[in-house]
Length: 64
Length: 291
Image 1 (tube, one colour):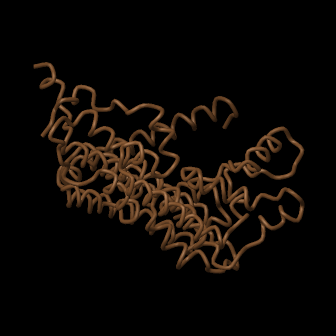
Image 2 (cartoon, each protein chain N blue to C red):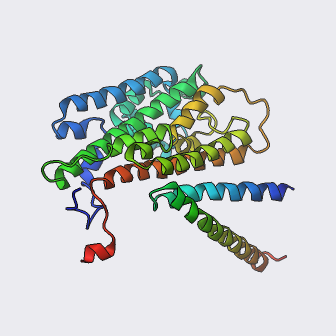
């Protein structure tokens, strides 16, 4: 439950940050929102990759 | 529209102008705008001392690097800087003359003096906001000076008129995220970006039970939180004075979210400036520039 809560907050905040970052490259809200969904998705994938790499490094360097 | 300088839209106006920006009104004075220069200097100085009469030497405690009396080389250097009026307090440092005068008047490195840095004051959240706001106001006056220099250099004659003054757009975005975009002509985008900043800030306050924005307890985080001036003002008036009996379980998360909201608003302010700037100096796409 605690992990779900953290993931929920993480995804929502990532989406809100993406609005501000992507908004710089668009002139209206509709184009911004359209681009934000894809950008958030890419960031979530990269987040999982980052966590997987860190977990891998932890297993290699410290052990299971 | 003027397209003289679009091939190099990011060219700055030089280091001299950058450093002149630390003295409110100096750029306006150099541009011959005497009354605006005096207004800039007076507004920043008045705002600083309105807060300084409340917080006084507390600013040393909130400095990024506190000039305490430990015997390390770093502390000796910081004490030397503070004694000539250069404590590294942000954003007050951006209003260099008032910050220097205030610290020269308050600096006392004796144990009693140092004790006074640590003593909480009545209404110190409001005082801290006011001194911080003077630094931000100084930065906006500097941005206005830089914009006028840019217009003079690249604008040609007759001087073009932007959709809104870029520095003003950035300044009002500091107080209300997205309002600068609305003034510059991108109302719906401004509302969307503003709502995003407000939502992250509100989440931060919610998770921390209102204790996330507190210069007295988390002064380094407050530097970034204060980049959203409206939120920082709200916290100074409403949530800052709340008494914390017990640390809320998600206090750290709240502090980080409010800090992220401040950094997001920095992006919003810069974008508001850019939107207004591009109404005069549009950026060509590479294909257009080549042809």
